Length: 120
Image 1: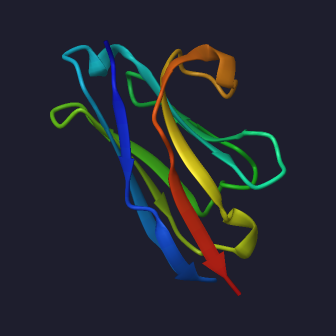
Image 2: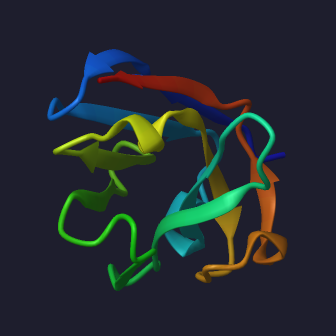
């Protein structure tokens, strides 16, 4: 069974930065594509960024130039570095493991989420 635990969320002022981490249990972490998604109150879950097992990355337009996804296979951890945060980035952020994609249904395993709040 694969388990994902996010951390690093919190409250920050607009323009600030946060780094989210997602620790993944199991010895097969390196074979999974990893994604970050977010869900704001009253809105559907949306794609943020993804990284393949080989290190290829893709981003939502809203994240390009501000967010960076990375992974450390030795630590079974994926990261999301978020810079120049805006109030509209406020959401619960989820990491997911599965097939490298920008589509949520490609991911079989999900974390519980971590709250990110950006104040103006």
